[in-house]
Image 1 (cartoon, rainbow, N blue to C red):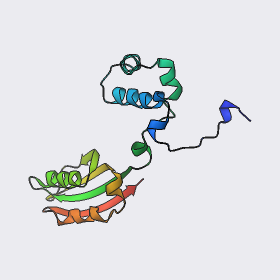
Image 2 (cartoon, helix red, strand yellow; image 1 turned 60 degrees about the horizontal axis):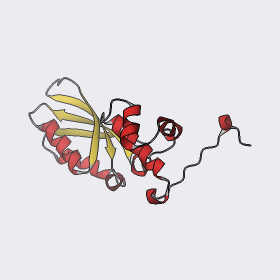
Image 3 (tube, rainbow, N blue to C red; image 1 turned 90 degrees about the horizontal axis):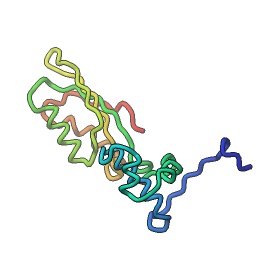
Length: 151
């Protein structure tokens, strides 16, 4: 049954060097567009050397492995004392553990403390054990840490 509307999806992992160049070029175009390296898909396609039709044919089916499979998003809640540099030390700690901070939402401090929610993307190296996140409480001014979700 080869009905395009009822397509069964199956993921396959393969080394990029054995695949046709078009797949790597589609990923490159997507990256150029996402990082504002080009203003349109047409200019990004011209820069990379593929047709727009080829890009649109594969853009929703081709992803870099580390982006799709080996990384996950974690949301954490922290209660921080209202002191200079506390949030900065938390962000530096997360950076030192090879995470990419996606969002930071901090409430206005009340009674000397502020609630902070941070979403971060963990690398393959940092995601195996989440226990290291609790060691944030050892930083000066960190009163509480909770892992809210891990995808």
